Amino acid sequence: MSEQSESDRLKELAEFLRSRRARISPEEAGFADGGRRRTPGLRRSEVAQLSGMSVDWYTWMEQARPIQVSAQVLESLSRALRLDAGERKHLYLLALRQLPADALGGEGVASETLRLFLERQEDMPAVVYDLRLNVVGWNRPACVVYGDYERMTARERNTVWRTFTSPYVRELLRDGWEAQAHRRLAQFRANYAKLAGDPWWKEFVEELGVASPEFREWWPRHDVKEAKEGSKLLYHPVGGPLAFGHLSFQPFDAPDLTVTINLPLEEHDTAAKIRRLLAGG
Image (cartoon, rainbow, N blue to C red; front, side):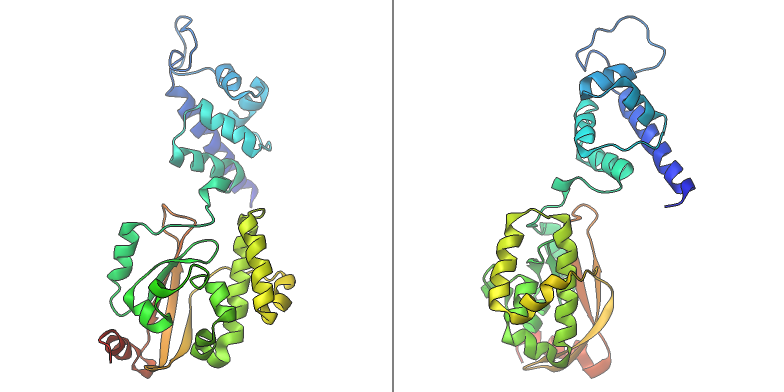
């Protein structure tokens, strides 16, 4: 990060803190009014007292000085300044350039609005998965291409587990299986760092290491990769070759979820084949 952008970030943090301090009256925070004040809201010393930090340290934050603060300090400030969930995330992003740990849940849930969005994709297979790469939302085109998620167990709906253990997925990908498995595992490893310490991951890695020799061999390599746009060729047992471009994004209000949409390409008449599969033939 450049010196200018770092300076801008600290100034934004300072202004944000001052604005949140100004909106809380002394009475609301349990302090006596103490007569006329030059500026509205709490004094810096009162915020420091409420958050259990030194006056100097808090003052330096409002002066945009380049000091390091911990998540514990930010939690205390969030309570002292009565920040709502969105403001708390904003504070973390400005101070630490990352979201609070509890904003990234391991197991996600697709909202009704998001599920409706998937259904409206018509001939485009689309899924939603969480940080553990569990598929938590899907549409009918996804089911006719990748398998019926409704009938799968929770373990089978995990894309890493299924990539490494499902004969159907291997046949679907054929020569592209190994490259796709490496990409999926690298994405899984990148997400693992966000939730290190969660016992679910240890159990999952141990179980999949037993079930898949490839996973057992590749996991110690520590390859990491974020989801990117691209294309892929699948070999459906009924529809034949299907060519897709794929696009992934995170909903603004659910950063622990990723939406992936497969767009049928002109090759192999993919869109028409998807429509025929949806019609049952």
